[in-house]
Image (cartoon, rainbow over all chains, first blue to last red; front, side):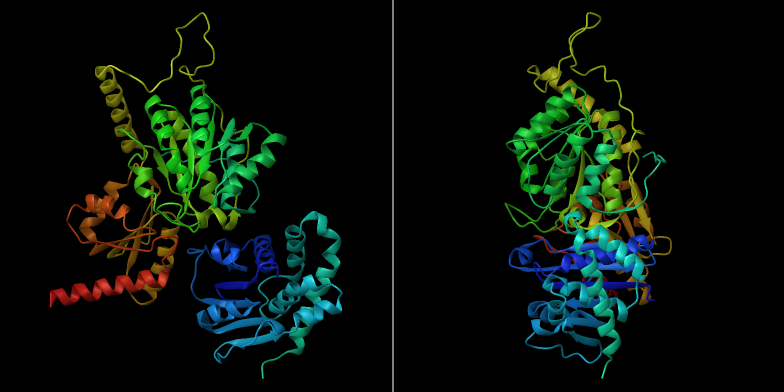
Length: 185
Length: 365
C-alpha cells in the first residue's frame, strides 16, 4: 500500500457521499491506521452538492486538506469536472455510470463507470448504490479488511436502520463482484 | 506550560466540535451557556444531548450577549463554566469578556472561527487572531489563547484552558476554526474524574459568619483603585508570559527557512515541508500553541539561523505582526495567506517559498 491514500468522495446531497467516507474512516480507525475525514459543509452543500476528503495513512497525517487525490468516487457531473483534473497520475477514478453526461478523459489514471444504480434497483433498494460503489472501490484498492468495513458499517448506520445491514452487505458484495469482472481495456 | 499524563480512553473517531464538548463534560464542567451558530452548533447540540443524562447544566440562551453574561455570573459563583460561538457571535460577547477579565474570573470561551468580516461565510478562517490575542473588548486585558491543530488538541486543550484559567483567574479562549470543528479524526479522550475542582476563596457562594462578603465587580469608580486593578492584571500577564508559553517545532534542526503558522495553517505547512524537502528546500515550522502568551523568544532565537520567515495564515496577515516584532528586523518576514473562508494549499505555500528564494537570489546579483 501507498504511504497514504488521499480520497475524495463527491456527489449530490443524499447520495450517501459523506457516509461512504465515514465507513472508510471508521474501518481505518479499527485497523489502527491514521485517518482524517473532512466534509464540505459550506455553500456547495446547501446548493445540493456534497463532498468529503478522507485520508488513510500509516503515518501521522499532516494536512487534512489536500488538493490532489489518489482516489476519487464521483457521483455527479460537477464533481467530475472539479476533481478529474486534481487526480494524481496513476490514481483511480470511479463514477456512477448514469450520473454523468461527459465521461472522464484522462488516460494517466484508471477510470471505471459502475452501473451502481441499476444494480441497486435489482436489490430493490436504490439507496445502496453508494455501497456498491464502495465495494467496487475497495476491491480495486484493498486499503482495508472486509470484516472491518462491515464493522464500520454498523457504526455509521444509525441504529434505527440496522435492519438494513444485510442489504448493505449484499451491495458491497455486488460491487466487489463487478470489480472482478471489470478490467481496464 | 506543565504537561500532565492523564489516563485516556480507547481511540474514537469524532468531529472536533463533539470531541471538545465531550472533553468538557469529562473535565467536570458545571455549566455551559451558548447560542447556535455554524460552524460550531454541534458543541451546543452535544451538550444538550449529553449533559441532562450525565452531569452539569446546559442552557441555550436567547443570544450570545446573554450567554457570556450567564458565564460571568456562574464564574463569579466559582463554577467551572464555558460558552462557545463562531466569529460574529464572539464579537457580540466582547463586552462581557472584558468584564470577566476585569473581575478576574476563570472561564472558557471557544471560538470556532469562520470567514469575516461581518456575517461573512461559514467556511474556516483565522481572521479573529487580533481579536483573540489583543484583548478584543475594551480596556487593557488579555485572554490566555490556545490554538489547537488537531481534533485531539480540540479535546485536550479544554483541560489546559480550565487549568490555566483557574490558576490565573483569567478567562481562557480556544481559538479554533470551522474545519477543525467539522472534521473527524481519531481522538483518545482524557477519562473522567482526574480534574478536581479548586476551592475559590473569592467565589460568591453565600456569606458565612466567618468572613467578609465576597464582591465581584468590574466597576471601580476611583481611578486610583482602577489603576491598581490594572497593575494587578499586568503583573499577572507578565507571569503568564514567563511561565505558560507553549509551541511546537517541526523539522527546524537543519532548516534554513522558517514557516510560522498556528492551527490548521500549521498542518498545511507540515505538508509544504514534506513537498519542499523532496526538492531539497530545507523548511522548518514554528507552531505557536499559545497565541497569548506568544512564543516570542523562540522566534527570536531562530532569527539568527534562518534566512527568512514566512508566516502562513488564513487571514490578511495578523500574526505576522507579532512574528515581525519578535524578529525585530534581523531577517525578512513575509506573509502568505488566504482570506474569507479560503484555505491555502500546501502547494501554494511552496510556490510562495520558491518565489521568495528566487527574488532573494536575484537581489544578491
